[in-house]
Structure formats: structure tokens, C-alpha cells
Image (cartoon, rainbow over all chains, first blue to last red; front, side, top):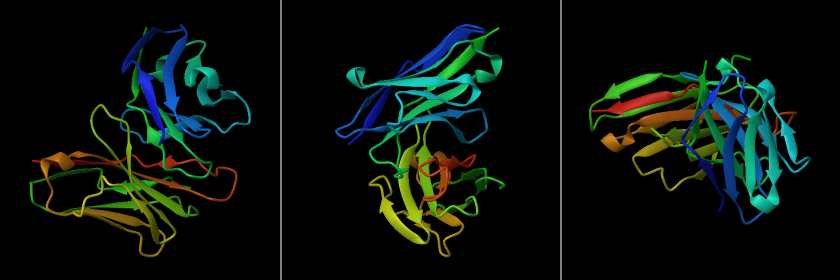
Length: 114
Length: 116
């Protein structure tokens, strides 16, 4: 079975500051990892995905994440926060590519301070 | 491509009533998923279809829940004899097993259920 743990249910950063959202995974097999974003009153949207091709994954809107097997982590970062980044972010894991039965974390709400 | 569409967006019902949600996936997608999301939690898998076949159901899906995808296009999720614990956002997502976006789920905006 797989699981993900998101540290920090709420994160606040100043506009222009580094965004760091933490995700640690647990999996008995090599995982496939995802970050989704949910804006208010909208559906979840895929930010980026790790499929074992490269450990540093770049996604949309300037976000990236690095897969670190030794730390079982897949943290999401963005060098400079924008007001439009305010949303809820979910980390998710699955055990096999093409199997979209994802296990999601509890989410991190990101607030941007002007 | 109009995205995944869910109806109704909001449903308020009294305990014991039946409710039905509809999901229209992206037209060329052969897989359709239902998830449930409660306040402060991430989405939890309920069930999924490949074409019209329901391939997996979570243990979260009690006997009061039934999902169908009769022609491999739209899907319905029915909850019978609703309970207050059923109050949640029900999310539908679709995906394709072919093409460049294989493995990516496309979510609808969800149907929020409130059981009084």
C-alpha cells in the first residue's frame, strides 16, 4: 500500500518569496508521484508528475519538485511566489504507471502575503 | 474539449433521501473515476470504470452507493438512504489509456452534497 504525508496543512509566504510545500511518501514499490492544485471552486489540476524519467520534475506555473529516494520525499518548490499561487495543493502517489487510482495527501493550503 | 462536467454542483437533501450525481467525462477518455473529498482531507478513491466496465470499488463504497457507466460515456453515482456522514464533495475524473496524457487524471469541479 502507498501513502503520502503532507507536512503543514497551512503555509503562508510573502509575495516573491520561496514556496516550499513538503510531501513524504511511503511505498513498497517504486512510486509514481504527483502534485495537484485546487483553486477555489475549481477542479483539481495537475501541476507535475514524477514517472522515474528524471528526479527533478518541472511543472506548470513555475513549479518544480525533486524526487529524493533516500529521503522518501517529493517536495514542491517555486522560487518566487505570486498572488495567483494561493490555492490548496495535494500530493498523490500510485504504484504503477497508467493506474490513476491515486492516494492523496491531506493537502496544504498556501496563502500569499502581499 | 469542454473538460469534465458534473451535475448538480450542489445538492442539499434530507437524511434518508436518495440522490444521484452525473459526470460527463472528456469525450475521448475511456476511464472514469469517482472520488470523495471531505473537509480537511484529500480526495479518496471510490470506484473506476474502463469503458462501461466497473473495474474496482473501494471498501468506502457501501451498499447504499451504486455507480454506473452504461454506454461507456457519462456516469452516475447514486446514494440511497443518505446519511449525514455522506456529506462531502464528490469528484469525477477521467483519463485516457492512450495518447500523450496517459496516466493523467482530469477532474471536474465536483458535486457538493449536504445531508441535513
